[in-house]
Amino acid sequence: MPDTTVRLGLIGDNIARSQSPLLHVLAGRLCGLTVTYDRLIPADLGRDFGAVFGLCKCEGFRGINITYPYKEQVTALVGIADPAIAAIGACNTVVFDRTLPSGHNTDYTGFMSAFRKTFGAAFPGKVAMAGAGGVGKAVAFGLAGLGCTHLAIFDRDSQRAWSLRLALERSGSAMAVEVVPAIEDAAADADGLINCTPLGMVGYPGTAIPKAVLGRQRWAFDAVYTPVDTVFMNDARAAGLAVISGYELFFHQGVDAFHFFTGAAVDPAALRAELIAAAAETGVLG
Image (cartoon, rainbow, N blue to C red):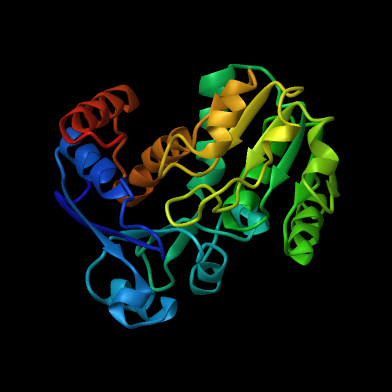
């Protein structure tokens, strides 16, 4: 049986509006657990990421979520048992369950769940993606698992894009992968468009995928969920594309992370209803 009190947290740089605390507290309530969940911003604490991570390890946290820009950095501090997660090279969920904490990636599983919930058994087709950082890595491997035929990757740091291409090829994925010098070079021929950059997030205005390239594709996904209605999502809807918002990734990765933290399986439908009710009370989506 899981403990009845669970201390959790989130380490990231731009998390003041993160709804992860609410998701995990409500999930705990539905499962008969008392959950506390702290936002931990290294700059605000006057410490670097490693020091904040060590603080959590020593001060009774059961687990922590990791978000931008630390998902790759944390891999040096955890053990990763799943070869698929090791190949991704990024973690967003850490459990302090042994001397060397265990690292997981629920962005990977959460993206696949969000895609299936929206599109059923349909395949992604050809995809153009902006951003090859921590969440981009997870989404790229998720696309491979969903049967994506071709992935074009753009990142302002071209070496990061090439590293992701190499990781996918080494994993034995059948998905064809290319690195492109600009997202516009691949967007017109794509079935799906994906933003895995921070652009569109609160504090990072704009869009990584120009409005002018939208229209020929079938679907779009934005990993950003604060706000849910990013410039990219609004542009994609206006162009007639079916969309998966970052909120769906947030929700599904949170369900998976909660299970890693507690061993409990929350009812997704009940949790979604609780989040919607909370949003109605506060005026803030989930």
